[in-house]
Length: 166
Image (cartoon, rainbow, N blue to C red; front, side, top):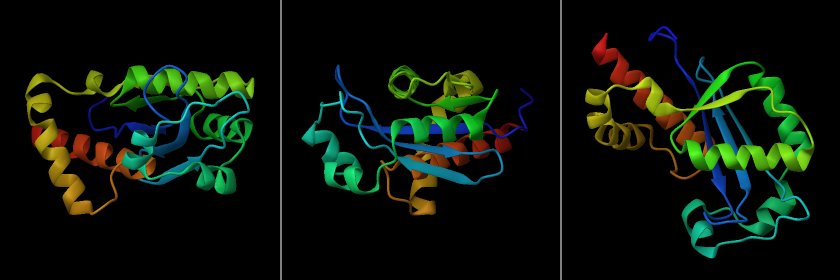
């Protein structure tokens, strides 16, 4: 990847963090800066719910049952949007498993790869990452812990750190 290419970022909010947790909101920031966000209606077998996680992302079960899309619809849309591309996550191990869970429940083959965002940043950028991310979040004034907003914040943080390096 040439470092001037803006990476596609994916961010996922989930029902919790332990075993049995599942994706409830998936946000994507494309290379051109456009954003896509999908609320996910839980599959029948997905029962896990952590009230502490709900306090962080502010997405209730009622909101999901009213506005959430079926897992097959979200999986299909992600495949259409991201086909054959690599998307990057700052919580790779969690996001990989939640995406896997979505595609398993939808019984659809995933057509894109999820990679760790740290593959795209060097040590000096890593050292400045948190401060830059906090500054970007404050400047953009976006609600944290909502998937497409977080994806946009991560993408802009990457962009600024790479501008300085160029």
